[in-house]
Length: 191
Image (cartoon, rainbow, N blue to C red):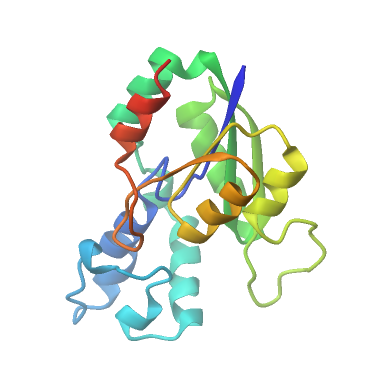
């Protein structure tokens, strides 16, 4: 049975789009930036703020009811209902520790029938304790050693996974180049 490792934010959910609409723009009435204009991730330079301010806003949103209420794309749910049992699924995210529990709950609520494994690479934040063996997602993938497919929205993560010999799929987002739409990726993964 083949194993798919899935990124969560901006792959299984629409975190950045919903954060921009519900977490950032309401408090920034002068912000005219639209999701399709987020050609960098992190987008703090485009927003005209320090990276720390952007991260505080994003992390607050990750703990919010709006983030908890995100719904997965119907195409993704349909694919899992049709083909999910044919693969092993691992969720892999990069988040600060205090925002991991809501992500686990979200994945289990929407995809719990298919995911038995959830891991994270701690995102650096002031005050976060050091000492985790995985600094990058590639560190976890290397340790796991059983990944057939890796799906993410970060070009750096995709490049790292390719170096490990993993077949990768980059989900198209405004901040990456050469990605595929999630429905197109799911068609390729349909046995």
